[in-house]
Length: 381
Image (cartoon, rainbow, N blue to C red; front, side):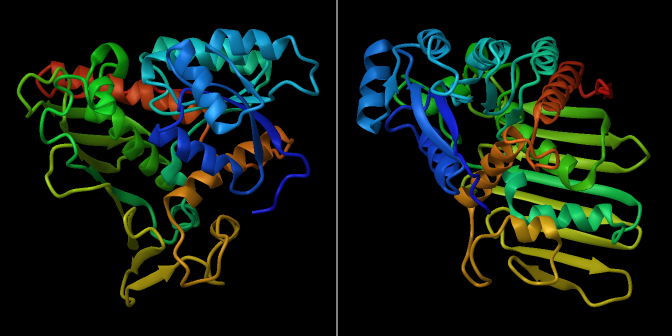
């Protein structure tokens, strides 16, 4: 990755000291020198927000995101932040993203984007009118071998696609961790008011949908879903099985669970076409299996000269030196920085991905509520 001539001045909302995802975003943003974190409103209370900013050594700490927006707008343009990274619980994404985008700041927002398609529509409108770059951190699309899988599919190596299977399996919510509120991640992710209408299907199912869409280019036309809550007393689903119909005739299956004991972060994708298949697994991200009709199966590896330009550009170290989660996350941030600096071909998951994901979640929830009926997914231009 090439470093931009001038790092993008970045502010962050949420993700204070000690928060896992905030630390990941900060590491990803600075890995290539693409961003400089200069301001933040890092927690839900003024005291914690200011203490976190001081602990991280930020030049400007604010007690709230509203104070940060006002404070940055009061600065000369050459000093204020250029972009904001939003790493809060889901229910805060919409008001923060809308306010900053409407003020002309570029936005990097965690997933799922918002709670409803109406909110997504509003963000699409504001971002378009203000001309801001808007990214959604579907970080798994940043892996080099995901980019290679996308190239192989788009180049027709697999032929017309027939079936796609995507799985995302975790086990961390196999017990009621949210009970009592000590585990803050479990508490808000299982709370409909903060997490949104979907539990596992919104939290990790949105990643699964975006991964299959990124690699295949297929658009989900309709879904038939079963959402299950296995842990007694839990307010949202913790397991989902979804049948997929794609525009053009292909079929698919999406499986997600957060109650499979022993599973850690097992995201897998298999794509099958008329002339070949490919398979990729997030826990072994540097390798991609490719099988083509009447030929030996191939194991392709990151960093090799036979890979396409996008996969090559997403790698930092020579073959045999594993790259992983943080590097893939950093590829998203590097793409956003390139877009902010005017690169029309920058590669990153954008607002269209986030809005489509919200439409998908809504359709899945509606299908489950109707006893597994087929429900059309809203098409987006």
